[in-house]
Image 1 (cartoon, rainbow, N blue to C red):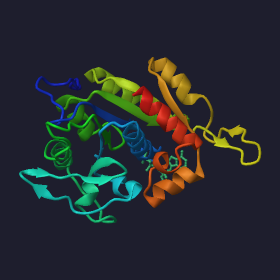
Image 2 (image 1 turned 45 degrees about the vertical axis):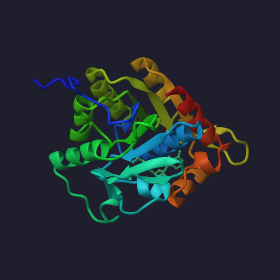
Image 3 (image 1 turned 90 degrees about the vertical axis):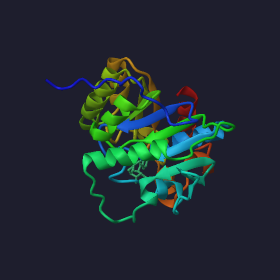
Image 4 (image 1 turned 135 degrees about the horizontal axis):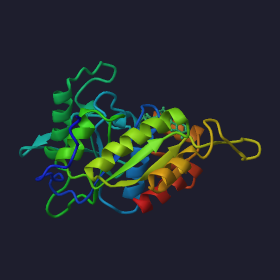
Length: 262
Ligand code: ADP
């Protein structure tokens, strides 16, 4: 029988971090990093001291999406996070070249994530971090298991597109997190629709209502419906969170409402 993933006694948050919130997905390419970056930026805009940890060790997109890169300094036994858009940022991408294949065995990958949680100066006694947003790798592998078992996760946001193929994996992911007692804060439906450029009428490219129905079935809130948006895609590619640069756009409004809810 499969071992039941339960949070182990002694699980802890990183030092001087008040809340640890993970952004997860069943599949890759559904916009998990996009949601994580904009959620973090929206929390920072609320005046919360916010960190962003890119734990997607197989495809770290944090540096590119936040337009930040460099070699973090090592000071007094801790790694100093970089800063961008009012966020403290750490990514495995700061340590390896973009474009180089990342070949990690499970234990190495989990150890890298553990280090980024606990060996980085996220906050201090005088200025603790209010919330640390974790961009997880997709799926339910070693890293996610390590997190739910050995770290004190306060909540998980799960991102999906409306497509059934994406929602099937959401069920798997939600079931793993729920078994461990990690609280599912809710689902985010990304690429929910495309507003017709002429009329604004929502065109359901990937189907409609899938995530809402799934949220109801799983008895978790639907936190946001993010449209397919060219400016959002462009902002990701240019290294700036849309929430910070176009706060009144439709996607940004959805991200901001979501930040209020988590
Ligand atoms: P994941 O982290 O799930 O792999 P990403 O956040 O990297 O997915 O998104 C994949 C690609 O889709 C990125 O290039 C991103 O800019 C784009 N993208 C994500 N969400 C949207 C959206 N709502 N509208 C337009 N493009 C999007």
